Length: 340
Image 1: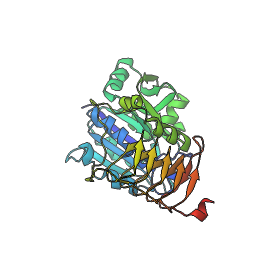
Image 2: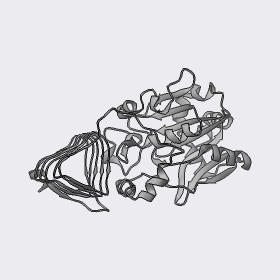
Image 3: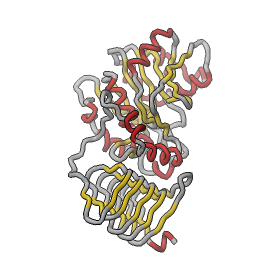
């Protein structure tokens, strides 16, 4: 094994505040049954990277609840495996990936490793990055740092030697750099920089609009086939829940449905997470409904993102747009008076 990984789950993304009041960006639900960090972790274990540090800042309770000891990714090991490495940032980390300050606080993670190279990656990109291929490209190039890029820019993933990252952790103040991403953007001497061109499907989640667009984009079967590859599975926390129940009178079309829900109304062009209840004669069009939400009967919802545990009273009508979806925060209760 030659690769270890530092997953930066402390990065603050300014455009996602409504979904990150009670959780980090990394644990935002995506595609019904997944969290964003599932894609980073799955890409790593699919490349046989078995030493993974997750650098997290508050609030990280939701993230801990989701990843646990890493069992769902086969990272619950006596040697190496998953390391949860909290940082001292009280209000979230900086806005660039791979903070040297956070790495410095957990220096032993890098010092004790036996691996020769490090993947530094974010947790807000959903894709199928092949780190074996990226490492081969990095080694062949002879560059000091390799950045993964896609058609629209950086994928916020970098490979460099463990020797170099230790050198940078000890010298970042003197060099006046904040993070690996900052270093790559500034192209500081004397290092050499290269790119690895990723040509597969990916989604960068850095705003509500992007979250909404990329989520509903997965209703296109072609996109799902590109993101969920049978030879490179995306793993997530395993929950024992019954299949979703579709009662008489319900109608569901062009939607992704997770387990454990009860559907009595009409759903189209939407993504429904686990354990959601949708009442009779409720109509949902182009909505993202996260787990344990309750939507009572006769509701009319279009272009709505409902975070976990939202309750919507019967008869409520909410209409957003594709560019400006209505976002209901975690645990919010919506009455007809609120919606007027």
